[in-house]
Image (tube, rainbow, N blue to C red; front, side, top):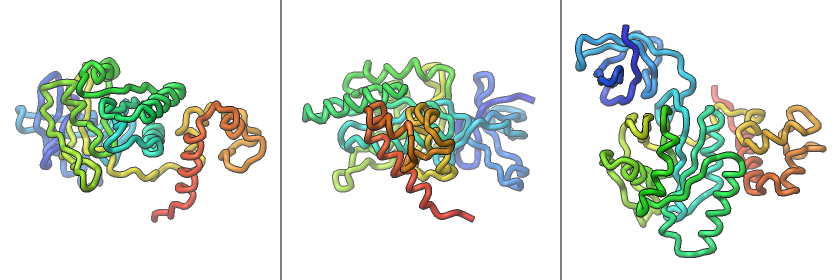
Length: 294
């Protein structure tokens, strides 16, 4: 039986890519019965009489999956944030980074609309944020679609990977994809001045061939809750906290009020950014206060 990858899901059909051919398939009833939904990104075993009539027989084991957008086997997340309109938010970026780290998805940070910064103080602030995140080990790109070469810095990172594009609405995700490959005439939305955020322009999940890899243009992460992340997991979702936590006196130290905490010392010495540590503490409280779901 042939093996392929689901690259698009639309109106009950799954489009499976196998040996450079696209097969339109339906899921078997057994999936519904077992409450399993095939996802874009799934490696599957399928059978097809022709390219229009096929059935997915088996879904192979996933290495990770997201609920919103519904996609699996993601290698890396391209996190798109704008410098202005909407304004850059390190706290929101850190929330995305935690979600990526928890799913073992490699993050790449892109800060768009650098050309729209009118104030040199904001420009310096954004560049300092970029330095901070690079120091942690994350690739960071400052870009503007007015200068396509700044956007194309990302292309080498796409090779042989499934990448998901995420970020708040209106930051320029679709404009960035169009700039990467002008065959992608994705609909771009203007910012609504009334709301100060973009209209959601991306409707269905699809993997698009780009830069020797596959990129999902998804409806962003509409769910940013830390579901499934426990308090003890959170330090591992901040690479610099994870690095220093090995030196803490107590095992299971959550780096709040515990004595002889190497993480708090690293914050005092400037080895961990104060704002990153503050976001960590806020997220920790949020997780601790979360009501259990039954």
